[in-house]
Length: 119
Image (tube, rainbow, N blue to C red):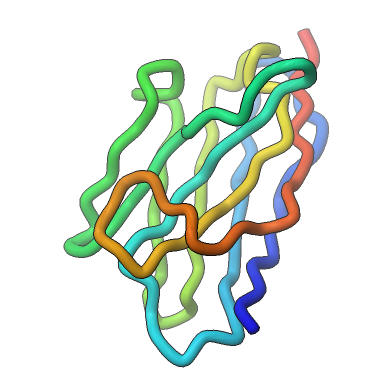
């Protein structure tokens, strides 16, 4: 059974940084694609960033230049380095993985980690 465990969320002031981690376990195969989504209160879940084979990343326009996605294939872990955080980045952040080659993974999901940015 595949499990995704996220960590690294918390409360930070605007302009600060956080690093999210998501470790995948319970799979007999590696995942081609890994990524992050977020859901703010009262809003739909939105895609934030994705990375797949050859470590090609892609980002939503709202986070481009501030967030960096990376992965450690040996650890089956994906990271999201978030810099210059803004109050509008406040949301529950979810990681997701996929066996396909896509920037929008959705085979398996984590439980979410809260990120709160104060002004």
